[in-house]
Image (cartoon, rainbow, N blue to C red; front, side):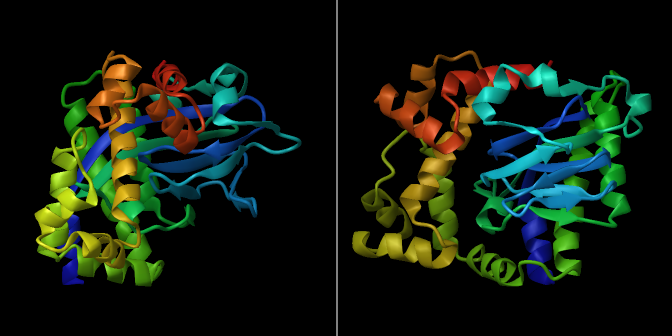
Length: 307
């Protein structure tokens, strides 16, 4: 248990966004994806997810780790099937944000969601590093109450709003980890993480990658950081994390690109160069391959979600 306490203490948690949403008509998003971790609380109606169409009961929560692509159906009875890209131009036909915090959770066919970042040593997406699928959280009232508190704060302009949202987002992360531990979910993945997060050479690699996303991150460079041979560094990294370093680097670069799209007005060319892609066309191809939407439309999606 002490290992898990150390991981929790090392987590840097950052709130990204939250909303309470009314479902206007049934829709299936065939390739839901976000670089942030998202927890969704179903108030009324029906939501299902995954290839097996696992159904949430009212009061259940769906946790989707950052970077995991999954189909999600909101509502039932012959839902319209759309990709993320198609949804951009039709969002207001299917969803409506509830802007009255006194009504959070009481509307028919409604859900709330919170999206957040949780990184170990401010470098590694903790939940993505577990390589776990989306899963249902049931009978967790402390967690669902905390989600509602975040939504209510987001809809106010009271002093201390940002501080309370930050504190409650950290509580969400802890409650999710506690749920995983109490239900003994993903035991092997957690054990692996608690081991490799102690390895100082791996931590050095993570830190170097984060600080140099726009630069040379070849295996030769990483080998020098970890003081191992170039031939061995890829094997070493994959042995401890389950992913090869170049795939991890691309995910980190794309995660940073999404953050820049969300928070700046920089051009696609500027963002691509900042995250290590001098060839803008190649950056755009890789971005669309990963997220299912072009970078420009991702920015449009974020602006729509913040209405």
